[in-house]
Amino acid sequence: MSETWRQRLLACEQRLLDAQLDKTMAKDLCRSVMGRLGTAFYLFLDEHLRDDQTQFMDSLEQRLLQGEPLAYVIGETNFFGLPLQVDSRVLIPRPETEELVEWMLSNHPSEVLQVADVATGSGNIALALKAHRPEWKVTGSDVSLDALTVARNNGLRLGLEVQWLQGNLLDPHLQGGLKYHLIVANLPYVAYDDELQASVFRYEPHLALFADHQGLALYEAFFAALPQVLISGGDVYLEFGANQQEAIHQRLNQFLPQMEWEFRKDRFGRDRMVHLHSPIRASL
Image (cartoon, rainbow, N blue to C red; front, side, top):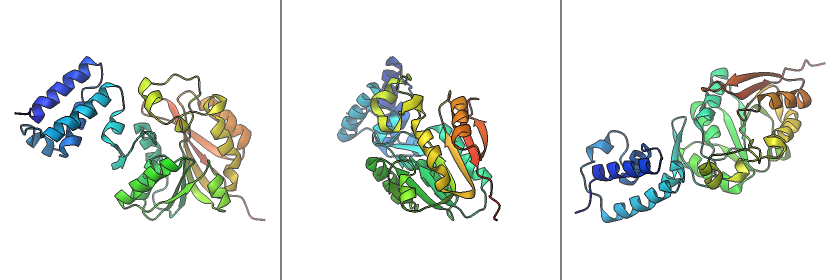
């Protein structure tokens, strides 16, 4: 007779521990294959695995033991309360980015806004904003058609209407003559000589990670084009690397001296976010 889910869970936890990996991933893996969410998972721990479930668990567990991120192995992650499908075509959304979304929502509780999410990846920011501000008109863009396919599918699964555009940085917005009250961007900001976790370097898309000029090239291009797509009086929210606050500050002084800005630390006390505000120009 096959093993029970309880036996498999304990064995998987031990194998992860032996490989110096997080044993809590075993529970998520079992939940995913079992198809039981929440407390229902615990009610079925003494059921026996079917042969196909055993084979599937074997293959997924092996991927975990090789260092592949859990979100790619089970094909899903949670961002701001939304279940998002993810795979190697997109970065796995980080918890710190949820803090950027929280900042935006707290600063804009009631306005009806035109919003752009640049370098949308899985669509996590765009979809979280649309879920919590359904009256906003949200557009997500990415240079990667593969990423946009993932984002679009996530939007369809969640029943959230977002417009998706393909192109580099602000180019598709400029080409469409679009302007926004609110723009958010979490651009690639890793320098090519930065050290990354092995699993990130091996499995996550390099197009969404790395940038020239010590990780700042895309922000420089973004800042240069920003005034053409931001409505007067508009706001911009950005995430950047943990050691880039001073460099971002220098680029803001260089490219956008007319704007006001405020930096914010993440939950770990690191400067990781900035809010830019465009003063309303007086009419002549």
